[in-house]
Image (spheres, rainbow, N blue to C red):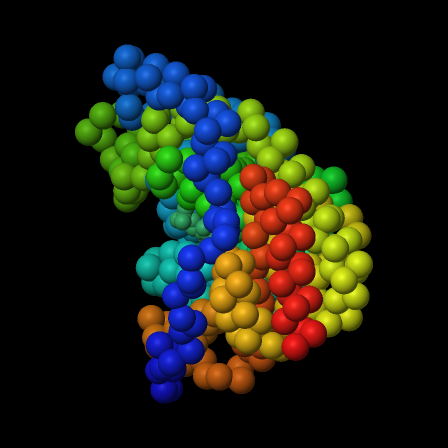
Length: 387
Ligand SMILES: *Cc1c(COP(=O)(O)O)cnc(C)c1O
């Protein structure tokens, strides 16, 4: 297959924006004292590896995700890797997943010698299409790996039903969706395991990398705990081939402080989303741009607020020129990335994902965004379409 020339499509670096796309500095100022006190406590105790802060965070996340167990690890990528390892997925196995995601959704599958089988997305919610997933099942399929992209749960009834019928694992990539709900149930509790990321730009972001795996299954939880510490239960005895992937106590301390604010911050994101919908409608743009679609029974937590238009590149350039920060998640589908060319996909194989990559545009939606800034965003979009 031909390797696409990714550089040719790269958009120019943005001019100085009038306000940040994601204002983590402003957010930190609202919790500065709490965070510094929590971090100081860890330094005072000098317990940096696992210990009480990590255990407490694990309990709190387990509760939030509606699971009995949560196992902290070094990143969201490692959460996915450890979940696949705990399910003993390896060479000869296939895992069905989406090409419209961050690279970490498929990297760990490849790393373990298994094959990611990429199927197309639903064009309305950008998530894995269960019908396409069903058609991709073979006697080698071991798991389905749906991503709750941008903070909206995938079509989990259809996916878990497929998994039940074919005895497959379901690994939820909930990196962008902490707190999101599907038919009233928290993401991370819907599949065999749920994988979360604490990367700083996620809805619950740490002061660096971190991740966690949730599960209802005691045996899996036990394996996950072993796998993150070299497969060792007792010092210098190794039951399994594991790795070193722990969540730092310092991260856990910071995350526990931020977790206390997560509901409020999620509500702010949802309020911003509602305001965008109103402003877009008032500006008469609701037929011009596609707004995020939320199927009934799902609660969106808006890690990103992603609109869609065939004039994406022109609109983005105009917004940049006028100081409005935006991002593109994701400019290229995973099946056309050079790193995965050996899988043999070509342009046209997964047309809905490919089209989404050309049309999506993320508007600022983070908790610290102001009403004035939102008005400025929508006014500038309106100005573009009036030209
Ligand atoms: C962020 C993210 C990951 C990986 O998380 P890291 O903590 O950055 O390793 C995986 N999947 C998706 C969809 C993500 O957005």
